[in-house]
Image 1 (cartoon, rainbow, N blue to C red):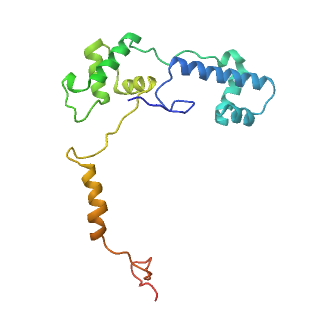
Image 2 (image 1 turned 180 degrees about the horizontal axis):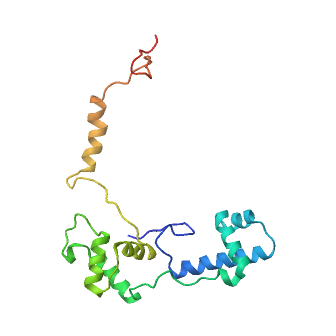
Image 3 (image 1 turned 60 degrees about the vertical axis):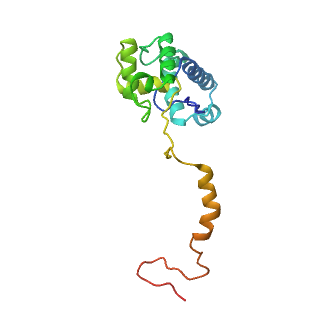
Length: 186
């Protein structure tokens, strides 16, 4: 499944080239505002980023101008080509069973790493796989813990019919105590 986050900056992982370009554009817009003499607080509010980030950009701008705020490219070179990434997505969508693992646990970072090595002979660390997946918009998925035999209609019927007759009655207006050692006052 895909992660659809609405945050301006990724929290860890990495940025896609499109996100990197958008982030660079934001920094360059900040540079224009610095040149016009706008205050840090105003720039941060208008661009919807933190003041500390704007202060950091301002220092960089003072030292090297707008050019210093341009992107320096990805922090690391992606080891998979776009075609390899597309193939990996297709293989992940086939499921773990198709690759010799049981379906119970699903895809883990260790399994994805092993699949990348098996398919492309490319070595990633587990953390590198996590960053790769995040960079491409994937996020961890936690399965719902439900019994395979669960019958939702029966559960709802039990709640509405049986539970109403067996649940304990509510205590009406009796004094309670917030202390374990003192009785409530009458």
